[in-house]
Amino acid sequence: MSGILVDVKRAGEVACVLLLLLGAPSCATTQRVSLDCVPHEVSVFVDGRELRAGTSDVALATDEPHTVFFRGGGYAPRLVVLDSVDGENGTQLSPPDVCSHTAFVPMRPDVEMHIDTSVSEGPPAD
Image 1 (cartoon, rainbow, N blue to C red):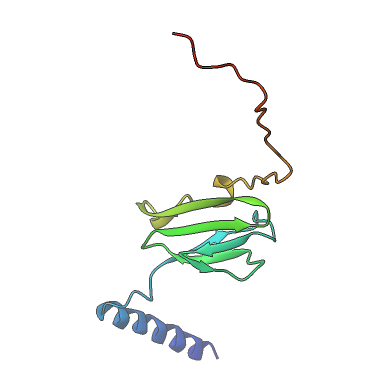
Image 2 (image 1 turned 90 degrees about the vertical axis):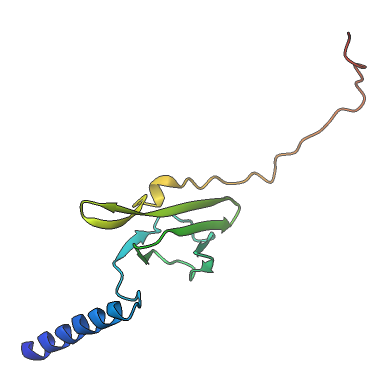
């Protein structure tokens, strides 16, 4: 059985090499990005595509930057840009933790502003 697993793994490695030689980016390194901090009522969009509600993490290719946009649920919209950065351990996304760079601030629909038009101070003095 282990011989079959080795053969399948080897076939996958050969396929990746062939795809790389043909210019296909499908073997790019990926990095898991946690979305555990996102309230359930907030919609998450990665590179313009909406994720399924309740998604706790997403695997993103590290060879290109990504945008993560949060919107809805009574929270102020937030945008986080994940840059592709070369480092000691290869190419990684930065910031590595979306949650540490995102604060979900509730919008306050109950706040009202009133302008008192009955008070007139006149034009400013010269």
